[in-house]
Length: 284
Ligand code: URA
Image 1 (cartoon, rainbow, N blue to C red):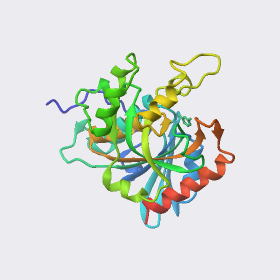
Image 2: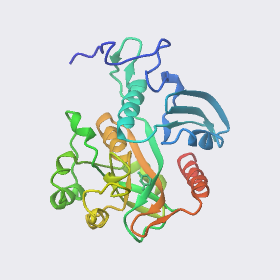
Image 3: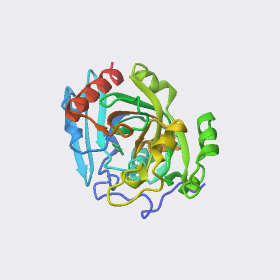
């Protein structure tokens, strides 16, 4: 295999940092919290005992510091799996590619990635302002089909693909699941569920403003196939982690119950609760 990467493939900034994340290898910890919203980054890092690094470019903001003696990073990814394509490839490059020589390292390093986000539940019994940990995920965004070696199958995926009725979307589906050993941290979460990740917020998630979505019964149909919640990032985070040898787990705050038409009455309070809940569990 040709290990040396061309300048056009692994693009670096003038200071040698990876292009979009604007980070050098020493700027990140092995434990990284991934949030969507750049404004959430300081809301997390305010709990660190010390913040050593603050860097950003576009929607990618990173703070790295120390909490209870352990190094930790928090990074914003923006919205959607197309951003996760950038985040996961560049994070992996920071630890598994020698950026100076542009060569893939022979020794592999695994990162621990903790996605902390928001979602909408499609199970009417899953209540807003509670935390839901993703065990299985189905990607309806198609991203991983561009990667040659990606394949994942388990009982959940086999049942889902067999019964999924939307023939036009079926070719886009791909699956992944959580990293067992770090899922341990979250064993006391209120909900553990199966998440569907979409390439959009409105019709892809069955929302209808002036435009109609594919099917009025979309939420019910996906819920009957075992899906508990909808969001826009976890499929790619879990799938890249499998392909690149990292460990990932997602916990989302349920901010909407789509089947009951309910929205969180105080999403700022539940965001604060989520941040404290995650930090307590991932740093002992
Ligand atoms: N994020 C989503 O993608 N969907 C929701 O319903 C809530 C948060």
